[in-house]
Image 1 (cartoon, rainbow, N blue to C red):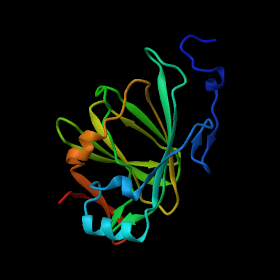
Image 2 (image 1 turned 45 degrees about the horizontal axis):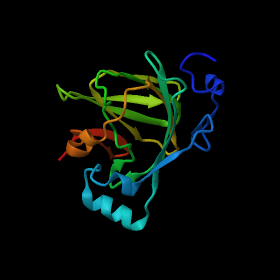
Image 3 (image 1 turned 180 degrees about the horizontal axis):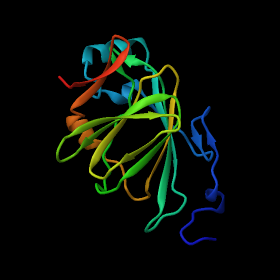
Image 4 (image 1 turned 90 degrees about the horizontal axis):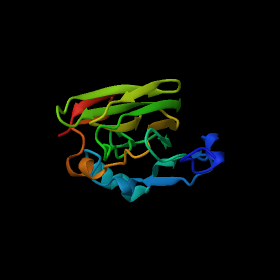
Length: 191
């Protein structure tokens, strides 16, 4: 067996977009109730939650091998919808190991990555759709947003030991929000 490899079967993994599963790994679901405080309009959030605790996204991941230079793979499926006029999104995160970069590969659907540098607080909106690749530099918070009418599926690839820091985002959130205006996505300052 190759040194550090968890299992020979990890050398090849099937992506199941219907189930949102990567290599048959478990799928973790995130519901609207899991994103309390992340949407800009608290009244719209509460109203949506009273109607339905909708499934917003799912994640399936694997670390084929641990150790210096190894990678972690994550499959995300973000469903379409809105809270008020703000599109469904992931919580977003920084990496615990701040210098760790990440690459996202769009597999299906259309949406965006909202990037925000932790120090300069510069924000950027980058398209993420089928066949598109987004590079997320280190020290950059990132959130996926679905602006389409079908699930947005993507693969994330990053160092196996990068970790996820959701707490920093929960404390202050992103400085920008993506909302629908006259049928188009518009990036606004968070109020």
